[in-house]
Length: 229
Image (cartoon, rainbow, N blue to C red; front, side, top):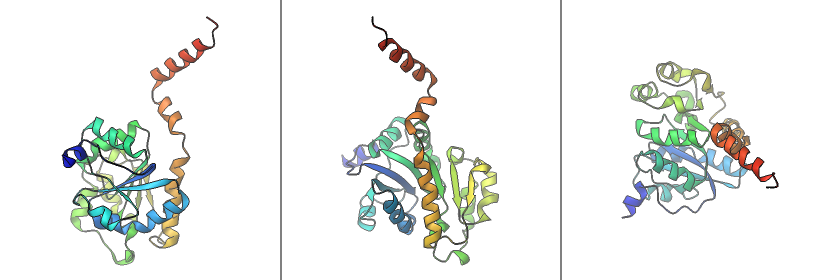
């Protein structure tokens, strides 16, 4: 029964507002812990929610006790929207490229006008100068079947992924290559500042502007309330 409710996006969540990090594996989420710590220091009222596609239920809570484990539901639009509302999500962050099954979650985030960011896993590699992505990973970044067009910003460790992203549906003007200082503390601080900048938006205003019929109806109702009759 618990597994069925998880797939429906019905689960207990003790947080208030959250950044939602999605990755393929527990290892990728664990490597990003220094970034979580900086985000919590700078935005104390926002929690970190995490989900891994390949990790069994309960494994994230044990390895990432400062984060809130989230089960990934069925990739259906209304269920994905329920998940984001349940988390009171303020930003959707992928470590590594989103997969085809993430499309519903991406569309739900776009409807909510949430920032959608993709982080290169190499950003969290302490041996960044000598690291290189396997060919299979490079192919994933260039896969046209992946929902890259929905992503607002890609943060890359270096330019090695640019040719692959050029073959995908990613918008080329939404790619930022981080300076070589990352993944040191200065580099991760710069990344945290960039992510924090997205939270200065007025989400309610953006959602209203994206729904012109609703906006006109609200204006008409407000105008009617000003009339004595």
